[in-house]
Length: 448
Image (cartoon, rainbow, N blue to C red; front, side):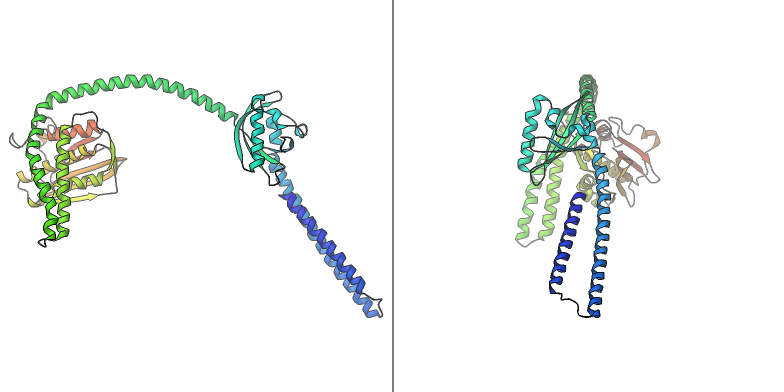
């Protein structure tokens, strides 16, 4: 780049000199022998002016030359001591220029490299490949990049990445040689370590899978022994009581827009209630399936929004709660995301909502209120459900999540809801379900 600038300056200087000579010759041809002293003085003045102009141009040229030399010196230093080896090759692969780094990579003095073929440093079995690479570079003027091994005089082989690009004249190409030997050695060592680690992991995985399967089988047996009869009876009761109303409710909901079209009701109201009704139907159906599939091991975890799931679950009971004069306070902070089982999580929320409702109704609480607060804390998702029903008696708080424990009597509860909820949160999803008394009632905290 500096050499090009110097050449341009020299060309401009030559043009200036040629132009000055032409002007002088033309001026001389027009001049006549001076006839007076004044004319002689005028000619002398013009010559002095021209001399000053030439001296100024010479000073500018000297300054430009000094700048070019300074830039060229910096460019040479950058070129020679760059961390990459640079070579200039002709189409035959002959080296016409090389920086100090390139000579050092090949282990040969720079003066001994000039005029030699770069291909002699390429292993014999790769020389035809290197010739093809040069041919493609000169043919396309595009950039080619390859990883090759170079042989060196009295030095071990060098693994490098070669990047070559031809100039516009297609008479020379610039080749950058980047030493990646240490990277390749590290990659090979990493590959070997990874292979060893994978082999170790495979053996560990087998042992872990066996241990996990054994623990899972024991857990499933314990749960099945204690729950199978009650769960089967409860599922059958729910299925018997819900399946028939589902069909009737679905038909009734789908008929509502027809009544609107007849002009009897507002379509917006009907469509909104149709959507809510169908969501209720689908959720009730999913609830039945969730109970049936509770002990199956083929469930997959998915990522879901705690806020959306909480609001959707609450919408299923919100209307009945209002009819029973129970207020709802929903506080959603941010958008906490959880990976787990959304249907099971919704069932836990529903169980706790129903327990809070029953406590409020049993105690005839004025201004009954259930507060739901969803947020993220310490990298975990948290949902708290708080009521103002007076709290849980201390003597039964420790038994609240035990199987078959209930304070509602045999005709109102089986004592399995909170036990199932704790199992879902703590065993299936690796979280925590706890309860504590606040000033006015009980607070259930779901943390996953």
